Length: 135
Image (tube, rainbow, N blue to C red; front, side):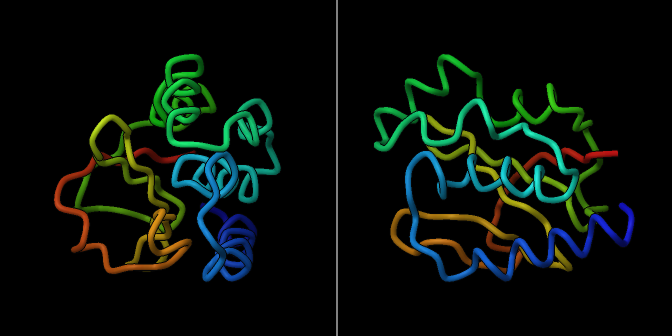
């Protein structure tokens, strides 16, 4: 990851931490796509943002657009080995019917949770995950 991309991600994270959870904009998947767009200047999130505003709507959107890992892969993210995470990597874990997405940032994970909003938490809090990396 270039220094420019890393700085864009850091600015994005600073702006998002502490914000409330919102289905379709600040849920973990939408947050990950917005982080990708912040880093790359792309528009991976454009087709899905604000297309739902409930958990049920998120499940419907997942059926239409695919799980977050599939969307990230279509945007160019590739599998990377767990245990060798780099800033900007996406960490995907299963969370019931969803695939939870987190963004790795200097040893911590940025994510959104309905009860806690957007926050950074220790990587060890994610028990099992796969890693996707944007080249």
